Amino acid sequence: MRIDLHCHSTASDGTDSPAELVRNAAAAGLDVVALTDHDTTRGYGEAIGALPEGLTLVTGAELSCRVDGVSMHLLAYLFDPEEPALLAERELVRDDRVPRAKGMVAKLNALGVPVTWEQVERIAAGGSVGRPHVASALVELGVVPTVGDAFTEEWLADGGRAFVEKHETDPFEAIRLVKAAGGVSVFAHPAAAKRGRTVPESRIAEMAEAGLDGIEVDHMDHDADARDRLRGLAKELGLLVTGSSDYHGSRKTVALGAFTTDPEVYGEITRRATGAFPVPGTGGA
Image (cartoon, rainbow, N blue to C red):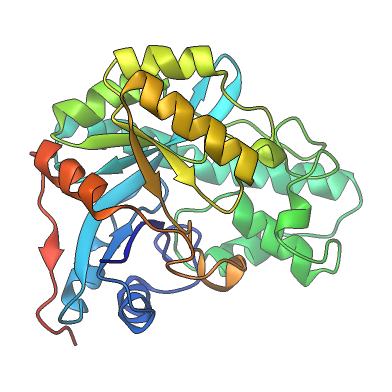
């Protein structure tokens, strides 16, 4: 089985619609794909409706969190999307995304970059707006060559010249909310140092004690040394180890299925989840 547990659609900052994402996942030879848009479940219906025969969909979300001033992401799988407390927290995070993006536009204007809110809004195309949309605007304007080049201290990285904070959930609260909604939680790309400061291992140990289920080890932003270190940490803490592409369509160069999760780990995730179940494809439109 080929299992990719971290993918984005136009419901947040990917460039494939949810329907295109599942069709492309099947074409890439995947057996299981997870839809994990940022702080939203809005793409579920379209993805399920288009799910090809032979492909299983894992519903999820990537939750925006912050601990000790460090931004981090928590992958939540197979939770009840209508559970009131987790739904309210996701909405609180999403509601702060627009004023945050407008604040980044204002800072870029002050730096002499002629980006406009209308441009960012067009790029987001109704999705949950985020830094990648602002970064794409910088690429359009020729300010930076790629989206990744916008995530530096010069521009949009944490603490960068045009960075603006947004509401982010305390990860210990997020872990509790996900578990209460019947879901499974995995720390996304915990050693992605090029994105900014990372959470120390001592904090990850505390999260494991608080109910964190796993850590994403095999990821494009982790080199071989980081993966070895994280595997050792996961073994020490009794955490599941996942791998995934963090696919964003044409917004990033990584391909669907570039990194995958062991079938036994996937099986354990589905056994632990009680809020939702994987959706088998029966041949979508």
